[in-house]
Amino acid sequence: MPRTTTLYRPTGPKELALVEASGWTAWPPRLPEQPIFYPVLNEEYAVRIARDWNVPASGSGYVTRFQVDAEFLERYPVRQAGGETILELWVPAEELDEFNAHIVGQIEVVQEFHAGDGNGNRDGN
Image (cartoon, rainbow, N blue to C red):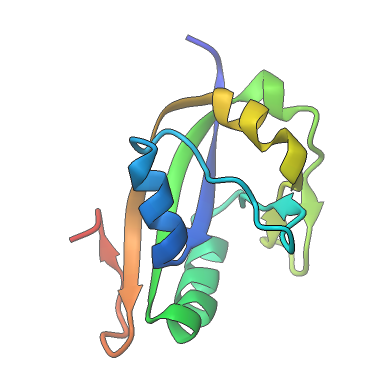
């Protein structure tokens, strides 16, 4: 079993439906206006995006967690996109298939937010 790194991805309902359609094993191809795939390194940052950006944009926001082969991830430097805990990886869209091939196990929903409820629910409940 390879050594893995835990990553998080805040997502809206459309992207989450595509992840589900993959059997919870892959991220969908980027749209033309999305040249980079941005997984993040901590859950708190993912929560902020899911709650504060995805909910207003689409009515729901989800925080997913997944494991990726740590050796493979070494090619992507950690980017600090703001404050000390705002850390993400920048995966070029053309490398997403290879990135998906290095996901270990399944992508899981660990928190979800919906317009009007104001609270995240763990484990998708």
